[in-house]
Image (cartoon, rainbow, N blue to C red; front, side, top):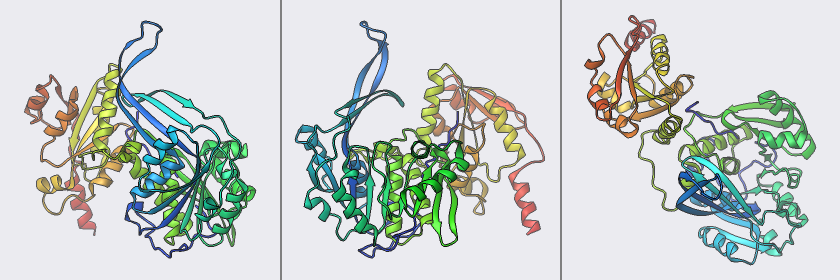
Length: 493
């Protein structure tokens, strides 16, 4: 089990400043961008998330009974992309088709900050309902999701693309992106503003000349029939799709690894791998939409393709760390932790291990300049149970304990390094001088600490006793310390 997940996500062509001339720093999230005029074109659905608990089987059949706690609704498909951009503060127009039914009315009500320019779909509004128990998906129920004929396009729909800074095509395979009139309008936009196309295996090919398409690895494999895995596969697939679709670039997203960008340059094809930062993540729903939105905003602000995709990857990672689609709910409360998602990830890991009857182990420290002693202690702690949660002193906490010159590495870097170790499943950052309050949040079965003292001498022993936890010492390796390493580096410098 790994406590770290990464969000993966380019194009050349019309990646300039956009019709509005808005500027944006290539790095950083979309929320820090200037206000842009962005059109989102594509298929809109109604997404329903039903969450609850399940502690018994139905007497009618051996299936779980779900006691519903929440029933959340949101605009899905292109509507989800529009929601994200509107929450970032952009001027968003959604160009789509909608049915004449109550579900379409619900979608309109869920997008109060989005200008909707919709033609008639001629079919019922599709609904996708996901039923979850805790963090586990139980079933998805689809209504009206058969592929309809290509819809008619109104003059208002094509006119909505005039004068925008960027266009995002969110193709969910229901025909909007295949409509000839819209494709002609998108081609006209691509001549002077960036167009980002998120393709679908059952959808239309991207319009020639656009800036970038963002298929995931599974989609790229279906589009190309190329074999292989990882970066070698993505490199070949991106090059093939750039040629087949006649577009500026393709960013093949690789899930928690990042993205591989293949693009045309004056010297031929250029391939660049952009790793995703380590973040705590759960439900990946919407990560691809968040990435495409981030790429479009960065391109509209003047970023080149690699920087734009890097911004999209960072946006998707931050989105997952903040809770994914749950972070988009109007009444969603922020998670009160020092590093976004850290507590949530630890609680998820703890829940999964305990549900399987396993033992939860925790340890703690500053871990400033990881060294061999740390690695051995962490590995020994992990061997005591079925997961290891590290309670990490925040930067402020380290300064209180070690002085104003410490830490040497920031808490974000220390979190990333710890999560890169196979023996660490999750990290929780705490601001106090002791981890007692952090421990009370997830109540580990074992607290492990390396040192030349006995278990009952550890200050955390009293806290663990509150719920019957045990304190264990693991081998201590003298002669290895961060302070000694820091002093040696200072002497060399």
